[in-house]
Structure formats: C-alpha cells, structure tokens
Image 1: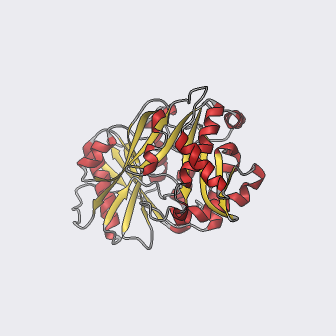
Image 2: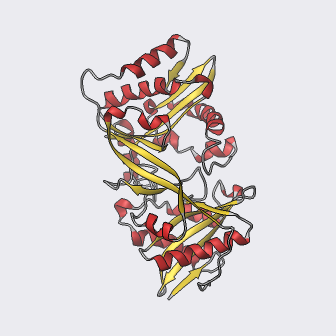
Image 3: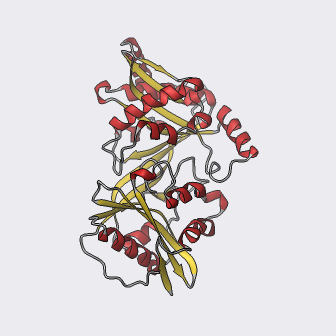
Length: 366
C-alpha cells in the first residue's frame, strides 16, 4: 500500500529527513540535514523568497520516496527538489502526482527540477559519472532516478557536464593560447589577483555584483539581496584556498571572477567536530583535487576567461593536483577549456513537465 504524507501531517518532516540515510551509504550521502530542516520550517536565510512544501511516500508504512515543492510568488513554474525514491515506478509516480496536483492547484503551469529550493542551494540531477565519492557541492542521485522521472512524464530540458582533469605534467607544461591571452590582458592594464582572506568580506561583494548580472539568464536563477548573498556564502571565508580565487579588475572595476575550492567531497555535511575542522585546515593547505565552481566575465571583456584560467592552470600545476571544471552547460565554450587534459566527464540534467493537464488523484493523501 502506498500512502502520501503532505506538509500538514505531523510525521512528514521526521520521515522526510530520515530517508536519505536509508538509501545511501555514508560515503555517498550528500544530505545537509540541518539545512533541510531549516527549509522545511521556514527558518532558512532564503525562506523569505519562497515557500517549501514537503511530500513523503510511504510503502507499507515505511518511507520510500520524498520531494519538496518550492513556489516563488512571481513565477508560473513550480520546482521539485530533494527528490529521493526507491526503485519503484509506482512509488515515484504516486509521490510526484501528489506534488504536481498541489503545484497545479497553486496556479503553476510547469514543474521543473530537481531544484533543492533554490538556485543558490543545489540543482540538477546526476545521470553519469559515478566513480568515487561525490565531490564538494555535487548533487548525487541514484543512477535509476532518470528512468523513474522519465516514466513519470518528465523530459530533459538542459544538460550539464563537469570535466575531470588529470594532474598536469610535472615539467615544461604550458598552453600557449591561454598564456598569450593572459599576457595580452595584463599588457592592456588588467589586474588578475587573489584576494587575501582578510579582504574576503569586501571581495565577496564584487563577486555578488558580477554574479547577479552574469548569471541572471541561467535556468532556475532567482534574485537575492547582497546582504543575503554575503550571509549565505560566509563560510567560504573558512573553506577557500584563496590562491584558487581570482578577481579581475580593469580601471578599478571588477570585471571577472573565478572561485575554486579544495575537494572536501561530501564531508562538510553534518555536525562540525574538531576532526572536521582539522580536515578542512589540512585540505585548505594542500588538496589532491580542486573543484572549479564559478567563473564569470563581463561580456564587454571578451577573452578574459582564458586569461583568468591561465592563472588557475599555473596554480594547479604548482600544487600537482587534479581538478574538476564543475557544472558547465552543454555547448558552452568553457566545456572545451583545457580539453587536452580531460580525463572523464560527470553528467547532469534539468527536467521539466507541463502541468497544463490536471491529474486525477489516484493516490491516498494523508
């Protein structure tokens, strides 16, 4: 028997939070339980921007699937996120049908996901490249989720890749087109530098202004204020190796940025212990792998991306580390950056489904 619990059921939150640990071993689980609880209770720093409604599917009385429907007041879309399910189409279908009915009743025309409440938290479904532990910030899902979602009527709307790069050769390694581009921009008066840790509270505001302009046309992008952005990413001051952070300036104005992070894998989730802090400090000094999270360049400064990349190539070469170019939209020029050293690819998708046709309620909702 399949039963669906909604937000107003007293057991929904506890069952919702319990499911990932039942489906994933510790090394593969990317659940931030404290953050999920804040989102479900409306106490997260971003909760002012949206409403979250959790759904849990019970199979024979046990939690078997879950998702959250997130609604923004100025959007005709609804987002489903924090999706997890056993490998059973009946269970996934019952869960999503209830979520879709709720979204349609709120006047939404389309369901998009997975989006874990916000662009700023996590989105995309992992569909390929399952070697090793999840890297830092990676969404991680069971390989069968794509088939479940397609069987429930969802289609792929956007594809993404994360490129996995080998450690660079120890001697005499250079890519002339990046090196030349760097020299060109420096000769024109550009400055590309890493902020000091003590400067991060100022530098993050330059990053904010660039991100809001440059990322605004990304799928599922949502606006947030400068103060909320700074608060949301405040922990980066502790986590970042600032040699892997670059800001590009021209005429005193920030026109490009890059943020890379040591690969903490999925070890930042859960309670912070002294061992966690020691792990962070050790990785911050030297990591075997770095994740290239964000790159943005003002379009008036075309070619600057390769110049910034050159400084990162030098850093990674010096550190003798592997790297991951994370979450690149298929077809973008950055997909082919440093392709000579590409070792493999992780794959992700964003899905959508029209809600124009209302669903009949075939599943019990508690």
